[in-house]
Amino acid sequence: MKKSKNNADDIVVVGSNNLQFITSYKVSNNRIYTALQNSFPNVMIDSDNSIYDVFGIIVSGSNESNQLNSPNTFAASFWAWKSFYSSIIVES
Picture 1 (cartoon, one colour):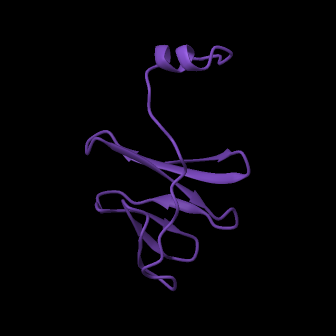
Picture 2 (cartoon, rainbow, N blue to C red):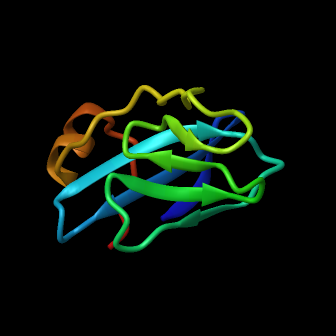
């Protein structure tokens, strides 16, 4: 799991090599998010003890049934990024 910033939004990226998925959510910057291990479909918990499933839905906690928003994203190989965005610098 990794937290980063996309424009003004805080983004959490969560995924699993073993389960072969990756997803991301727009999150509150005043909470701490921690990955859950061996709890699929639940993938993370926040500092308010709310538990989120793989779809970003809060399945347990004070805001149960609320859902995180997903940022507009796409996945591509490095060559595709460079083809569409000529000024991008790809670091390995």
